[in-house]
View 1: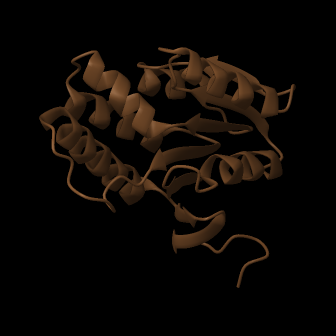
View 2: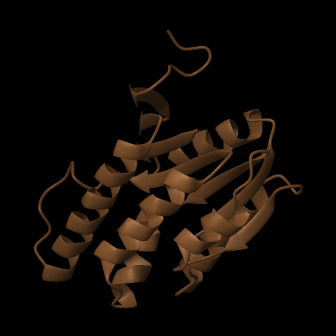
Length: 175
């Protein structure tokens, strides 16, 4: 099953993804895309690492997401990828071919076995950014979210810590 969890900053999307991964009953591999470019981001990363169960495997992978998914996927494994928008940022800063990277990621997801949970920011609900790079980021993140959502078995939008299923089966405990 592929699950895409979308939401704004501090919406509860990562917490929900971790709860779903834990409830999957599978061995969890957490694929983190963040890079510590400053002290504040390092503090965020450290806090996230401390919050994860010790028995989860954590891989730091800021760029090669498609090949990491293919090498780590297995029928009895849950991959939790947090987050796609940081991955887009990393790709932009690396001046990668984002269309090719998006296609490779989608192909990896189509071929993945087991459960894959992806976290991404919903960037299209605010104002159109003023700068060229910011607009490109918003466009690329939106196109990536659309591509992954089309493949996903379940898409969940989180708002103020409340998950709303947009596509696919309801979450356990929800009507």
